[in-house]
Length: 230
Length: 389
Image 1: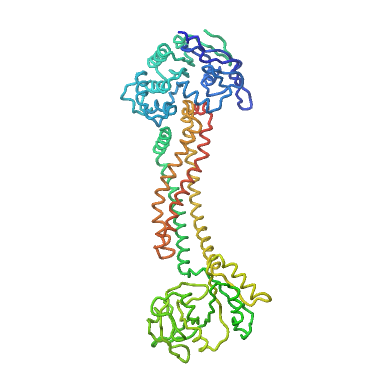
Image 2: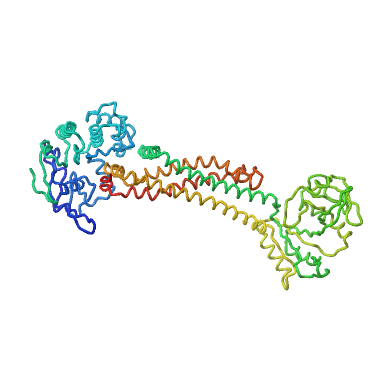
């Protein structure tokens, strides 16, 4: 696998300070690292350690105060909001603890949405159905609204939505946090398969040490610094 | 396709909060109906006034200046002399100059007695000034033409006999004049028009009551008016010179202002509707805080988020304005029925044009009210919005 050595994300010396109630809270301090294509990385650490902040930075939802982040070799630090948004749309898939599906849209429309944003084309049906089948959602659920689906089903739809634009990177924030262990394991299997079979880079924030077994590497963060990589 | 997607999201959100959306749309409906009905009413008012006015706008009326006693006239009875008439003719250039005698007299038709305005005009000038409905224009010095309203009141027809004044001098009606409306020069609708010669023989008077100057080209009206004033009022003011077009314009302008004012009152209700749409849109933004965060995180541009919210207010405005436009027919009908007791002005194009105007105002108000909420939605920090519960 020649491209497995090729870093898909590189972050150097990133620092983020939040100003809360007149106090400066350092969320990340001089954090560096890189992620290779096809890697499964777990980011672990106690609450408030800065792991979600790091994930948001890597997902271009937030920008660091200093330091640089390269996605696919492209420097993102000086990008405009529109450029960052397009980067998220085309290269990064988000999977959240709360599933975060759009309540107004059906399962299928939720999956279709990012594709329509990207292509503007009307014939997305095949692609959407393929992705929904690949996450093993029963086809009769396609036309259900999120509130009519179980947590596991919603998370499958969310994964399908994250995959529909064929991004290189999947960012998962506690993807199994709202699921029972059986469903959670199924979702983890699915993410692991995506990593090994489709060469997706998966970066997952979690509390749960048992999930670390799915990861190639685990980055531990404490008080905004990387305390160890295993 | 993307536009349809954003439109779809807007429609679905309106449908989920249907009661709130309906109330906001009702605000717009009321606003559009108010502004349109008031516009139609104002226009009906202007139309009804201008219809009762003569459409003569090409004349200059020269009358003796109040307080000036010209040559050949006695105090309290000022007139325009032959010499002054000549001066007017010189000043007027190629315009038609029509000297007018006017007064009032008792008349008797059959057994009925009453009073009428009496005019004395040169027979060759009568066709210039007045349109004939029936019969013949006056030739020579005999005969009289009756105004339409007077003819209707006294059942005058061509050939009727009218007795004039104390001496009951008899004259025969040769023609009936067409209705002219209220004018600023002469008002023969309730009057009798004689030849100037008959008038002079009857009253034995020197000098004219007024002189009407009809310009051939409307653009010359100002310069002609100025020339007459320069000729006659050089040393002292001997005549007053009115431009009928200016008078007409002043009156119509006044009514136009009244119409604008009534519309502005209607506009206030539209403003209130705008505030309610603003409120609804702000609520929508607040409620959908998290959804906006999701949309942004999965790659929706700020401009696209703005579109979703602007479409929402546009839809409210479109729906409200369409229904409001239809209801405006009823609103306008009722308004002019009550105020003018006449509904035909509703179907005049100048009235109907207020319906698209009102609708456009409704749509613009909604969209403008949605701008700030849309801007606010698009500028939310996606991370904070995602954290929002």
